[in-house]
Length: 141
Image 1 (cartoon, rainbow, N blue to C red):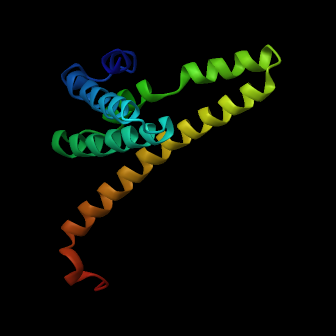
Image 2 (image 1 turned 180 degrees about the horizontal axis):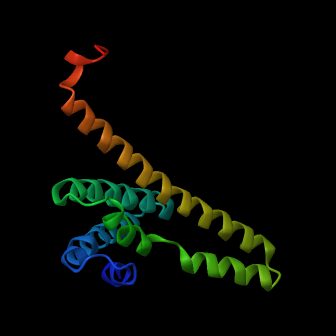
Image 3 (image 1 turned 45 degrees about the vertical axis):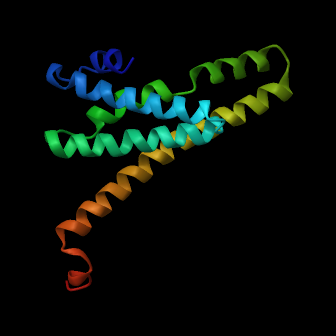
């Protein structure tokens, strides 16, 4: 699916394989987390952390924007089926199940967004820390 997203967003051909591997890695992390009885929200968070770290690593190695690798990585994690089922419950008048599933869908989406944000922030902090020479040069501006 990551490669299809890459083609749809016109990612350069020589980067399609790398960008789709980010999606594969994210889906594997999600699958193993959920199959080990982890909450689906935590599984989505861990998978999005994986997307963020691998995307930042590939962006530095290949000298391309991280978005090229992030987008095909997180699209397979988006809870589309849950959003559809939420709307289906609401239209049918089953508001209790609709609100419950809607809240779970929002939490999954938030976990994905926060995981990508957190991994990108941590990665950039570590890179800046290494470039500035660690704590020895801290505060010497």
